[in-house]
Amino acid sequence: MPSRSRVIRSHALLGLAASASLLALVPTRGAQAADADLKGRCLALEKTMAGHWPDASTHIVSVTPQPAGPITLPPMMPGAPGIPLQLPEHCEVYGILHERTGVDGQAYAIRFHVRLPAAWNQGFFFQGGGGTNGEVGNAIGPTGLDTPPALVQGYAVVSQDSGHDNQRNMDPTHGGTAAFGFDPQARADYGNASLKPVADAAKALVAAFYGNAPRRSYFVGCSKGGEEGMVFAQQHPEEFDGILASAPGFALPRAALSQAWDVQSFAPLAKGPDGQPSFARLSAAFSDADLGLVRDAILEACDGDDGAKDGIVGTFAQCTAAKVAPALKARTCTGPKADTCLSGEQVAAITRSYGGPRTKAGQAIYSDWAWDAGIAAPGWRLWKLGLADKVPSLNVVLGGASLASVFTTPPTPLPPDPQTLLRWQLSLDIDQVAAQLTATNATFTRSAWQDVSARSADLSGLKARGAKLMVPHGASDPVFSINDTLAWWREVDAREGGKAAAFVRVFPVPGMNHCTGGPSTSHYDAFSALVRWVEQGQAPDRILASAGPDTPWPGRTRPLCPYPKVARYKGSGDLNSADSFECQL
Image 1 (cartoon, rainbow, N blue to C red):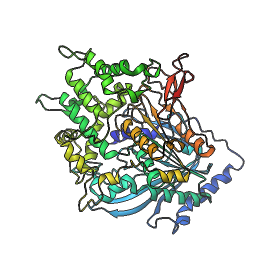
Image 2 (cartoon, rainbow, N blue to C red):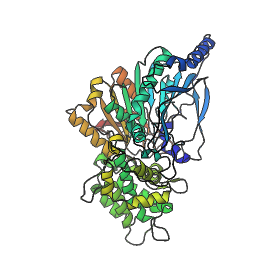
Image 3 (cartoon, one colour):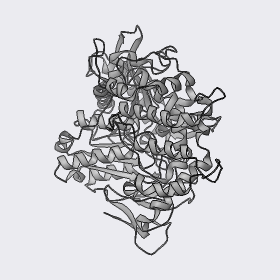
C-alpha cells in the first residue's frame, strides 16, 4: 500500500519543503581537503567499526559519501508533487543487526539508516517512525512544518524500520504489511525492543566517525514515533537529553480497538444495495456538510469559553458531550434528512464514537474524545470515514489490519481487503477483543499490551537524569485521543506531587488533527523550545504557533500553552494575534 504508507507517514516529512532554501553552503579554501577527509573517514567506517559495535550482530551494509545537493522526497499525499530539499555534505550509512528467521518462516532483521554531516553540531537526533513502520526511513530528521530538518541543522540523524520490512515481510493472507505481527519477536521489536539497540549502534557510529560522543542527544517523533519517544522516556531514560513525543500512540492496542468501535458506530450509516454496511460507502456516512454541522454545534456550545469567539475551542477540555448535546439536537432533522440538518442516526453515531469504546458493563476500554472544531477537516475524515475516491478510511485499512495481526493474541489471518476488514471489525465482540489485547499463549509469551504500549506514569528515571519531555497533541486528533494524553499527564503529575511540569509538559493544539492539519495554529517550533529547555534551562511557558494557508485564518498566531493552562483572550486586541492572548488556568 505505497500511497497509504505515504499518508500514514506524512508527519515524518513535515518541514522538509519549507526548509529547502534554509541551507546555504559557502565553499572555503579548505573545502577540497575537508571533502577528502569526510570521504576517507566515511569509506573507512566499515573497517573502523568491525568488532566495536555494542551488539556483535551489527554490521554495515553500505557507506556512501554524499556531496551537498538537492533531493526530492516522495509527496505527503497521493498525486501531490514531490518535496524538494537541499542536503548538506554528509556520510550516509545503512546498517543491520539481529538477522534471524521468525516462527512464521520469514527472514527478519533490524535495519537502520544514519546520516553524518560534515559540519557536525555535536548533536545526535533519533527520528521516530510512523504507522506500522517497516521502512528504514530517510534519516533527515524532520522538526516541524517551517523549520529545517535536523540534518540541515548539523545533527547526526538515525532512522530505523523497527525490525521488519514492508516489502520482504508482506503476506497478503496475513494482513499484508501487518503480517509481522504473527512473529512474537517482530511484534516486540515493533513495539519497543528495536529502539535501544539502534540508538546504541548509531551513537557508536557517531563516536567512531567524529572521534567524540555526541554532546547532546534528542528523540523526535509523532504518532508511532511519539510512542517510541515514550518508550525511551519510560524504559531507557539514559539515552536522550530531550524527547519530543508528539501525539503519542502510547496505548496503541486500545486505540486500535477504538477504531473498530468507530467502524461499528459509523458503518451502519453506509449500507449498500444489499442492506449491509459497505466499505465503498463509508465516506458518505457523513457528508462534508454534515460534519460542518457538527463543528458548528461544537463552536456554538464552546467557542466563547476562552473569551474569544474565533473558531478555536481553546477550552476544549471543558467542552463536554452534555454541553454540545443541545446544539446537536437543534441541528437534528425533524423530517427527512437534508443537507441543512443531521439525521437522528448520525447524531447517535457521532455521540457513541466520541464516548469511546466500552465493555457491555459500561467500563471504558480506551478513552473518550475531545469535542473540538477540527472534526470537519480532511485530516479527521481521512481516518474515521475516508476521503471519497482518494484515500480509504485508515481506521479500516490500517486499524483493522493492525488489530487483527499485531494487537491481539492470537492474531487473526485476514487479507488486507477493505471490505473483508470492515466486516471483521463489525463482527467483533468488544469485550472479547479487549481481553485479547492483554492475552498470552505458548507462542506469544508477552501480550500485545506489554510489547506495544508505553503509558506508564513512572518517569522517575527521566527526572533523575535531568532530561526533558515535551508532548504536543492536536485536540482533534482522530487516531489517539488527547483526552488519554491529558489523563496520563495528570497521573504523572499526581505521582510527582504536582511538580511534573519541571521536566514534562503537554502542549495541546486546539483544532489540530493527527500531527498536523485542521483549523488550527499547527505551525510551531517545539524542537527549538526543547533544545532551549535542555541546553539553556529555559522552560517553555508558551510556544508561538501560526495558522497555515489551508485554514480559515492564514497567518493567525496563538500561544500554545502547557496543560492545564489555556490561551485566553485578554479582552481586547486583534483576535488574530498571539499578543492578545495569555496562558492561564
